[in-house]
Length: 180
Image 1: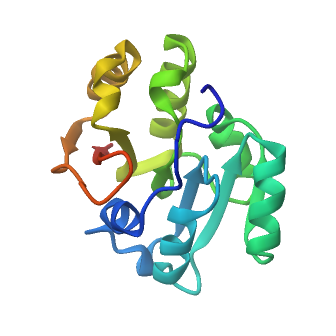
Image 2 (image 1 turned 90 degrees about the vertical axis):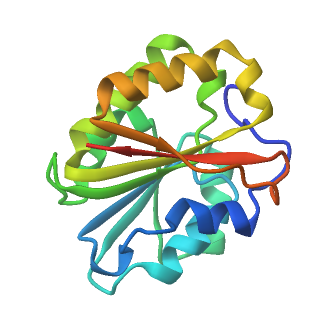
Image 3 (image 1 turned 30 degrees about the horizontal axis):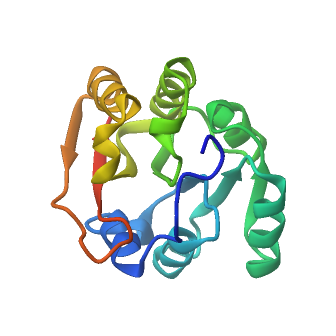
């Protein structure tokens, strides 16, 4: 549960909801946390511009290898999303200049400290007005970690909005839009 938080890959409806309203075609830098099988990656790759710098951070080495095989031109870093500022720097992306971070991380499964550390790192990586987009499972709201995530996101970011439930996902989910 601390590594893979899904019972099934995210649906195309959730992937579309994750990028809805974002102009990724003009983004200078986009980062994906926890791409897993690549459901969000596929949607991101169809929307980014030719000059957009995009890389993914996947902690699970086997999943990172599979994603590299599926998308050989995508730069996939095997590492910790909490190190996003340093990892972006290695890509030539300055702290505070990332336009958008899209996350498939299993937030409720993490410890409170890890959850907070990653949220604060995402904030530091984003430009003013940049967004962290992530999702939660409707059923996940029964977990204390989901409520801690929501409180911490509201503490760290200037604005947090939550989408309607995406029922065409297993399990049903919603998207958090966290703006710096």
